[in-house]
Image (cartoon, rainbow, N blue to C red; front, side, top):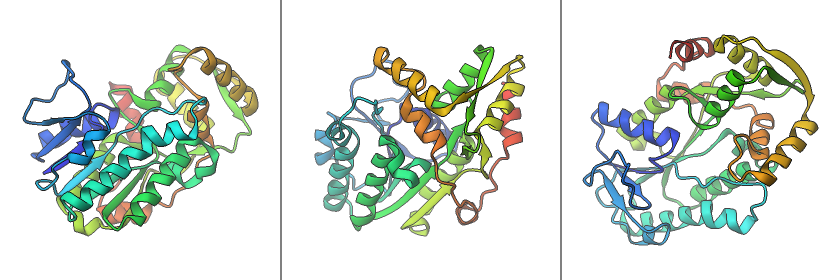
Length: 296
């Protein structure tokens, strides 16, 4: 049995559907009553967040997948980030030790954690990774690149929606910035492999993505897939950062933020071959998952 934190997000919601189709038993944590929840009462554990984490009964679970994340805004203080994204993990680690020390914690981190000084988001993921590694519990850390897939959601969904709607696309300067995408189906399959044999992946740090591609080239690929005509406009990075900063001042839930920008453009290149080999998975190519998006 698997316990999932963060089942309402992009990856979490698709993971639940994937597990259900593939016969993986799971329960999800529901932070509050949700009339539109697609989980029945037998699938969910409702709790007051994050205090009730300290009283969770974990004996029935062999693995916990932690996907919960509270969006980080430019104006957030370090304390606010710790209260919303780090403190719940501290409570969960303590509860695992007391309730089920043999349970494996699978933490969904980010490529940004490898460049922790570049953004608040990356720093937060890095700090949580360190907490887990120092805790002496059984763990697996999964670092996805930019998660691409359908239905269009998450950061990629915002980027693709912008590409489809905008006549002009910014080509960032300097142009050397790279990203490493990964297809959502490959992430779901990887998590299924991990929960099927947790000891095999104990103390593993798995980097899941494809080889690097320049961000500007990635945007051009998306432009081709969208079928629309675009004008490619060179834009200095600092100008885009300033523009996003202004937008964030007026819109708390801006479609693209300075945190997103940092994560996209200041990621460390991940070594990926050992991770995919460990999972015995051949990842989807850029061409294959762009074709799937085009066919949607």
